[in-house]
Amino acid sequence: MSSDPIYVTRPSLPPLAEFISYLERIWENRILTNNGPFHQKFESALCEYLGVEHLSLFANGTLALVTALQTLRITGEVITTPYSFVATAHSLLWNGIKPVFVDIDPGTCNINPNAIEAAITPETTAIMPVHCYGNPCAVDRIQRIADTYGLKVIYDAAHAFGVRDDGGSVLRHGDLSVISFHATKVFNTFEGGAIVCSDAKTKQRIDYLKNFGFADEVTVMAPGINGKMSEVNAAFGLLQLDYIDMVLERRRVVESAYRDRLSGIKGIRLLPQREDVVGNSSYFPVFVTSDYRGGRDALYERLKAYGVHGRRYFYPLISSMPMYRSMPSAQPGRLPIAEMLSAQVLCLPIYPDLEGARVAEVCEIIEKSHG
Ligand SMILES: *Cc1c(COP(=O)(O)O)cnc(C)c1O
Image (cartoon, rainbow, N blue to C red):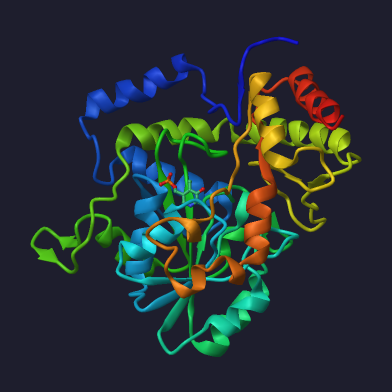
C-alpha cells in the first residue's frame, strides 16, 4: 500500500493561472471590499447557481449565523441540535441566547422533529436545525411546529451547498439559511459564507448588519459587526463556480465507490440516501457499531496507522463541552441517540481528486480490520 497520507478532505482549487486575471482587475480598480464589483457579481452568480432569490455574502459562516439571529431579533431560547460543529451553538451564546438541545434522528443525524415540541417554553423564539452532512432536515414538520408556536426557523446549512429536494434548493426552507464556504466545505472561497433569505427588505437589513449597522453614510441603525467578504474571496468564489459541477460529480463517484464496497460489512452502518434528494456528497460518515471488532476508535486508530486520517464528526457532542454541559438540556441521558452516534461515527476521506485506488485501499483496511 502507498504511504502518502490521506486526509478527510482536500480543498479543491482552480488552476492558479486562471485566478491571475481576477487579481489584475482588483489591482486596476483598487476596490478591495465593501460591496465591490466582484462581490456584486458573485452574489448574483450564486443566487442563479443555487436557485435562490436573495443572498448576502459574509467573511465566514459563523459571522453569518451570528448575524442571521440578529436579523430576526432572536432572543431567549433557541432549540437546536448537539450533533453539529460547535459554531452552531456558539452563534447563540454570542447573542446572549440560551441553546436548548434536543435529540437527533438516527436515520439522518438531524434534529428529531418529534423532540422539538416538548422543548418549547415561553422563552422559545426560534429553532436552529442543521442539515447535517448535507442531508435535508424534516423541513415540513419543522415548519408546521414553527407556525403553530410562532417560532422562527434558521437553518445552519453549512453542509448543504447545492443540495436540492423535489421543490428546489434546500436553502429556500425556513426564514433564513446560512451556508459556509470554509476551506473544508464542498464549495470554498478560502473563508466565506452567506445568508440566504426570501425578500429584498430582509437582505437589506442583513447587509446593514454585516457592515457595522451602516444604513447610509451618517446613519447607524444597529450595533452591527464587520462580516463583509473581501473582493479577493468574492473573485475567487466566482472562479470556483466554474468548477463546482465537476467537483460535485467527482464527489458522487467517490461516494458511490464507498457505498458499493462498504454496504455489506457487518458492524458498519451507512446513512440511507433519499430518492427525492440530490445530495452533495460533502461527507462520508460510517457508523461503527458493537458488531465491529474493537469499535469506532480502534478502526480510527488503525486507519491512521495506514496514513488514512478520518475525522470523528461530530465527536465530542457540543452539549458535552464545558460552556454547555451544565445546561439541563445537555444532560447525556436526554440525548441518547446523539450520544450513541457520536461514539460510532467516523467520516472517511472524500474529495474530488481522491482516486478510486485510494478509496479501495481505505475499504480494504476496513474489511481486514474486522478480522
Ligand atoms: C463549518 C461549519 C460552520 C461554520 O462555518 P465557518 O465558515 O467555518 O465559520 C457552522 N456550522 C456547521 C455545521 C459547520 O460545519
